[in-house]
Image (cartoon, rainbow, N blue to C red; front, side, top):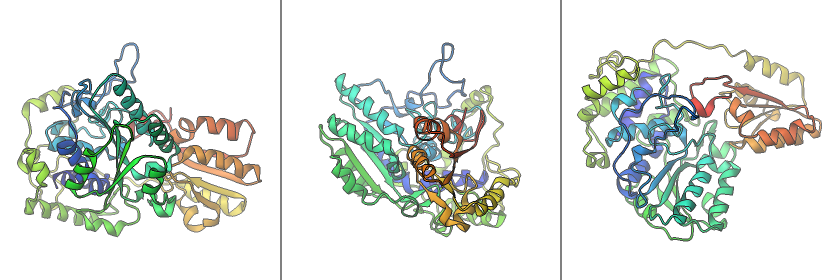
Length: 464
């Protein structure tokens, strides 16, 4: 499939990318855009302007939803993209179906670009800022309710990941949508059983998701997430009084069985060395030589030649927007690196002093407990998990619960050390930190990673 090929190409030439997400979501997203939803033609500039700053008196708010059609048209469906770390997959698809220019795609994860690593509402194809995860469904429920009040006939469909069902807000949103009979709302879920730290069943198992959703009163449909016909039929089947949840069971290694060697850590692929990278270059070369293109993409009049050709007019416009120099695309060389539009550059090894000091400290303090929220390796707590499992707790993607849980531990004489990204220490669980930890003055240590004004993840991951 062309979408997976493009994501793989980016991953190779930047020594990192969200590859397994392309494996699990490609057919579902293609089906939503080309067959299941009533989306109008893109009304967005195919090369979006760079980020001008947070909306304010002199900076108008912008949205990436225009790539999905005219969101003000009452007859059209609205697609809300929730798992914003899947952004690379979404951008790849938008290029393949002609809703985004290749020049914009090459601004992915570049400084100042709205084509962000972790998508936000100003990013192509994104209607809302959905990070941290689980907020999109609540926003979509509000949009759907408002559209019903205004007499709009178009539906609101949210694309989600199964990991979001570890977050309490997801269940609050479902409860709300069922109670208020928001039948013009649907959620399509990528059930791939994976999250950042590994298999969901090993982190915080959510059990039988379909049964739980039915217990909440939702209309649940279960399909093969790689079967276009099943997905299309399920998404088009709904009633007017009950929100519909379509569970798409998927394979996080679909199309790239080589990924299975990295299991259970599939969240983000970064090559260990040039030997491993060369193996994936060979996979890409094989895909190109076989000239296999997914039928759905072919119906959108997209092929390999079209994907790789440059549009000189759009390139000139992109340059005016201070895009970084883009190398002309051609076939792979023998090593598969020099002629790519993407270059990984030199990978610099980073020392992680906290990691080694942490495990030494925990060994000396038997009442110390390290807690993480699905970012264990990213926050250097994996060494505790692997060597001192009795002093480690994985809380899944549930930061608010983690803060109050830690407060409970501290009340009983333990010393919790919470590890997550800075935004998930401050913004999301602010009330829980205040009420469960700060007001009672409990000895809970909060360690926030990726602090500061800028991070690779963009606005959703900026701690200040």
